[in-house]
Image 1 (tube, one colour):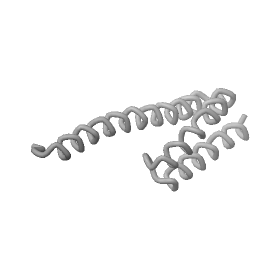
Image 2: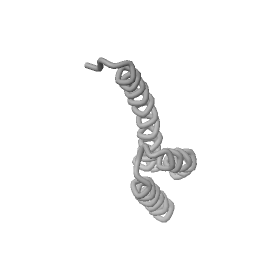
Image 3: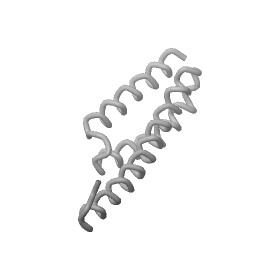
Length: 90
């Protein structure tokens, strides 16, 4: 348990940041899941619209250090590849 005023404040800041980051991470995962759900449903238009909404989120979270920039790039690449394959199959 924190004893000094500085340690108490730091513990409070860490709790606040953890909660904020958890919320942002959840929002990001939901956006990616929306794209995946549209892909599974075979709806290329909805998948593309969801992808366009998810890309700025991925980039923003990578820029802020919530996820690694390579992880964001990997998600974008894989999702885009699946949407492209869905359009080719249709």
